Structure formats: C-alpha cells, structure tokens
Image (cartoon, rainbow, N blue to C red; front, side, top):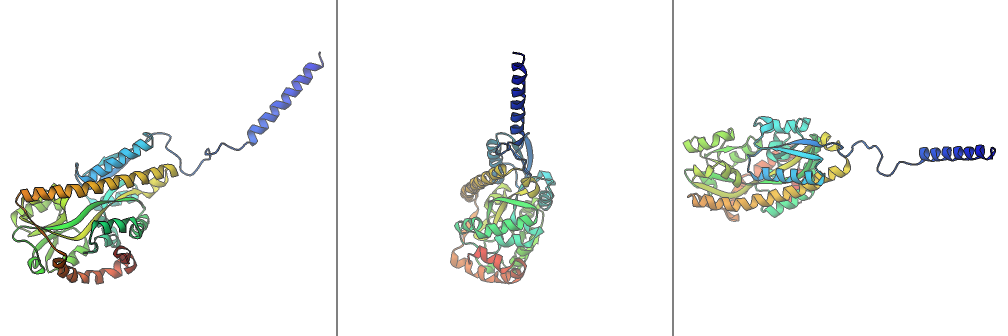
Length: 346
C-alpha cells in the first residue's frame, strides 16, 4: 500500500505537467488576436459638425446616422451632432480644417467648401454638368464618387457618403431672369468659390461674395439684385420674403459630404468601420429623399407667398450653357479633364 501511494502521486504529477504543456502550446481562440484597431471596450463619444441650422435636412440626416451607429454598436459609439457650424464658430472652411486635423471627428460639409482647400472638389458643381438628379446619383455612386473619395483621403478624410444640398436656383427682386440679356450687369451674391466668379462673369453678371448672414438685408435694401442657392436654403433664410422671382435653371449642383477623420476611422476595427459605412449610406439616402420632398413643398410656399416661379426649358437654358463653356476651358487644366469626364459620363 505504501508503494502504491507514491506511484499514484507520480502519475498525477505527470498528468498535471502534460495538461500545463497543452495549455501553453494551444493556439489562442479565433478572434482573440490583438489587432491594430479594436472594437470599443468602453463607450466612445464622437463629435459631428453640420453646417446648416437645426431642423434642416442636413441635421436630420446626421441625426439618423448617429442613431444607426449607436444602435448597431450596441450603444458603444455615441455621436453628438452640432448644427449651425457650432464647433468652428460659424467658419465652414475652419470646420473642414478641424476635420482634417482630428479636432472634429465627423462633418457634413458641401463640396463647394472643400473646394476652398482644393479646387478639384468643385468639379461636382461645374455649370450645367447634370441634366437630372438621376445623372447625379449615378455619377456619385460610380467612378465620379470614387474619385472624390480618393481626393478626400489626401486630406486625411474618409468619405462615408454623399448627401444633397441640391440644384442651385436664382432669386431676383426687380425683374425675372429668363435670358442672358436679363441677367446682364445684375449684382448677384455668390459663394466664395472662384469658379462661380468666372461663371457669373461669363454670363455677363456682376458677381460678389458676402457673408450669407448679410444676404437677406442686402436683398431687402436692394444693395444686390439677386442671389443663388438651393431651395431649402432659400426657404430657411426666408429669402422668398424679400425676392419676387425665382428662376429654376438647375445651373449647378451642390453635394454634401459625410466625412470622418481618417485617423479616427482607422482607430476602429473592421466591423465597426463597416457599421459607419453602412449607416452613412442609409442616412444619406434618407437625407436626399427628404431634401427632394421638402423642395417641392417649399416651392408651393413660395408661390403662395406671391413669388413668381420661372422654370426654364432646355431650349431656354442653351444660351446659358454656351456662355459658360469658357469656364470649362479655364478649369480643365486645374481640375483635370479625366476627372471632369468621370462626371460627364464619358
């Protein structure tokens, strides 16, 4: 019996050593590797800046995005939305700089504002480039959109999706614009984009830039003759209260980019990155649908308020198209013919 006890103890020791060795040599369970980027283990809060005011379709799209991300990450990623360019003190250009440096995590900014940093972003807004929203949707979902996303990466921004500010229309106070002769010498307020200065000069107008907050008063007092903007912006700023005419000419398109700081994006694992992309796609589709619906409703409000709506036919647009061909000649060397052709569908 005394000899049996040591043998049993020896067997137990050998088995114990064997099990320890197996545990040390066994591979880690699948998915437990330590990657460069991991899922959030604690709740993460991201800040998102939106240019337009509270209640706009921009803000609604951003809030939809935040809701979807929060839901699909099980509450681990919260996105706080700041409308009216609060994070940059109202400076849209600074808002994009903050996104590039990572001071802000996400933004909804117009491609027109991006063109301040790089004029190639203005390609989307070249005059009379698109004849329908279907053409736009196709271009941004295809090679044109891919090219813009590549430009964004150069700025340390990941393009998650494209929303819509819309086709830009012309409002005037003293007389309607139906022809090139009508717009000649008119003082038209334009955004601070060089291409628009060339464009309106080509049309024979007198373009000038000013802070948008000053536009309502300038139009009311007759300091300027007109201005241009998408329908929802015209409505939100109550421009229809101080302008008698609106010319629907779809002369330029304004996209909004849902961008995320590249370093911040890459700090998340692949699964969470895909959640960002999928949520952005759904949120942008929602924002675009909403933007197009409210535009129809707002035009009815304009009409009821006594505004005359002039919708140019394709034949009436043709002289305007011909007049702005010089803009393409000027900007082809700057933007690149290859990039422009991606949006022309060539």
